[in-house]
Length: 404
Image 1 (cartoon, helix red, strand yellow):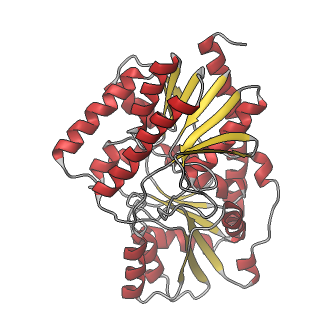
Image 2 (cartoon, helix red, strand yellow):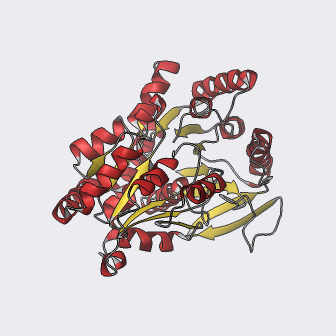
């Protein structure tokens, strides 16, 4: 079975889709599939083409044994929606143009969304190659963009909803990262074939246990690592840090880049925070070292109903390392990892008082931290092992295509 993973984001970029899709590609290949990737020149999250990559229309390389084909993409640091849309559509166009020219037919196209618009490219390539098309939805768009106020133009919102419906209609299978996403799509496109394809962890990556360097220094370190974006509502961390400034042992580290970084840095200055450190985006290995060394991990999102069906990808790695989580996400994530997995403490999204209280609760109870960390590691390894997730997904593809 020949499978093409179509995604705007891939290694050597760091981030949730990059890690998840590269892991899936390796597991599918190990199961016997012939897997290739069609993606953009690496540029995320700084919107700068990575060193070592020439600006060519099309180029190929191998990463972890997987053939990776790359197309040009327009990049610009401007935050206005015009520049973001130009970024998305430049890759959609180049992926279609170079894909049909340089690649041969596949049995299945697995297209990652967001960006939603990449579904157009997948449908055009599907029609050319007469193959199956799986649309993997990791975040609902344009719903998320509308609710967060990223897109305010009513015409653009209306067109985006129509586009989403058209892509769902033309997909042979829609996979979703959460059950909440699938439930929402089912209301939009009733009767569509849906498949729950959650995120997870590769157990081999988390077999080692590190001693916390922060603990050796008599510090209690809270970590956030990921995109500094609109959806996360990271102001809650800084306001909680302000409330805990009289506890010098409690320190906060935020790792990453993104559109909200300047605003957060300015807020740090306004609040006069000396217990918060910002670090730039780093290679995954460096981030994992920081995860191993922290005492607890903060996973926030804004207080929006649409996020009640969200499971942030960044919570899996700290759980796999046995770190308790402070979860500011209601709904599906809370039910799975707090109520069922007993892996951390829930706090109301965007409620700095609640977050500060939860941090103090963990800080003052080492035995509780240990218990929650142990619970989380056991729960995530049992229920969210990526090898098992990929195996079930591949078996679904085999049944679907009639291959064995």
